[in-house]
Image (cartoon, rainbow, N blue to C red; front, top):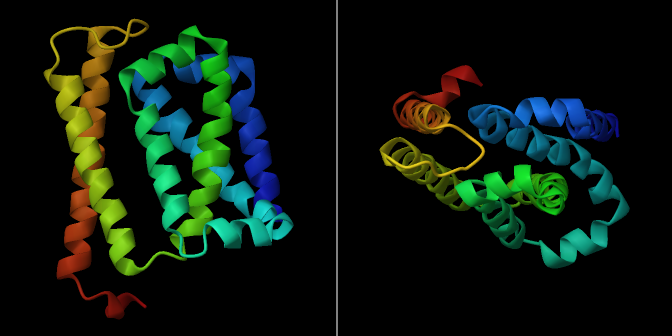
Length: 185
């Protein structure tokens, strides 16, 4: 329950208007810091929901696949430039962001990850590598402004940040393949 309290404190902190406005004022911070932190807050709070609603989560997410699909759909939606733009412009979309990322992405992620097979985890991991590469290609390669609320230079910075994340994920994957993990256990 301690983790759930930390998740709730993180969620409340991120929802404070000055904090939300600060994090949303820079495009790369909005996408690569605020949104993952919202998912992390839901991930931390998931223990509470697992204790309070064990039958519900076990019924609809017994093998982890429905929860991970919901997580991937919600996360992929928030990677779209239009979604980020509307989150700044429309308060109802901002509210949806603060509900969907923690509760429809973070909670299912924690509930699903331990239930997934290693092949399922690998598929999700590869999806995210491909997604970050495609997002980098879109944000770096586009000569026009994709988000009305951000400058073109911020868009390019976000693209390079996405490419850096993809590179780090690939390096991690390569070290898992080529380094014997039993030496470190």
